[in-house]
Image (cartoon, rainbow, N blue to C red; front, top):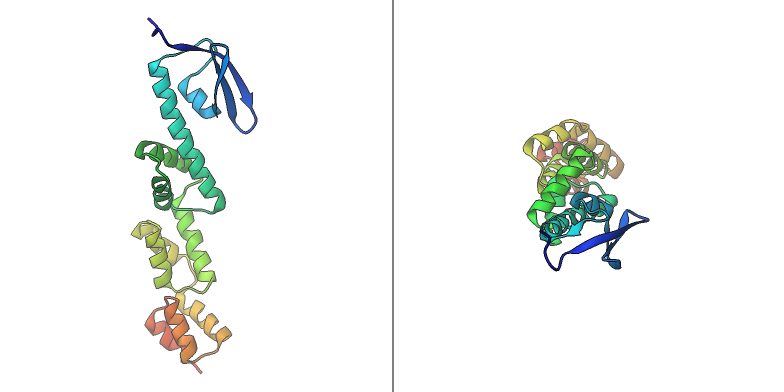
Amino acid sequence: MPAQNARTVTALRELPRGKVDVELDGGPWRRMPVDAVVGAGLMVGRTLDRETARTLARELRRSGALARATRALAARDRSRSALDERLAAAGVAAEPRREALETLERAGLVDDARFAAGRAAALAERGHGDASIRFDLERQGLSDELVADALAALEPERERARRLAERRGRGPKTARWLAARGFEPDTVEEVAGEA
């Protein structure tokens, strides 16, 4: 038996950019993402009872988390952990965060192995040593195994340091610069002191 004040969906109008205008009892009600409308099972003639409203609210939270996460990924690739922290800081509840991250992982948009390899390569290209790269990847919430794999895929640290020392010139100033960039002390001593 429907509740006395339950309203009925009388129209769903699809709009650009994945939005839908929902009409209740012949009047405009709300504009919402199409995935939330579908997930909640809204259709013309359906009564918006308490249970449907709860389902719709849950779908709206999930859709909002997914949209926020997708916008964050549009700027740059991120690890799952970093994306989770970003969503939490934005006030997204735990369950919608988890669902959004799982959806993005299934779609291949969040991939910690790819992120680790790409981030390590970018930092190496910018002149960082293994210790600096390891620190950055761990700070991104990546596992020890992913960090080790990403470092193993790089050109050896000594070769990178040697190339940088040739460009900058050998000597104490270059040695300090290499050390500050996270190169191992033995590597710094070897390449910066070569004649």
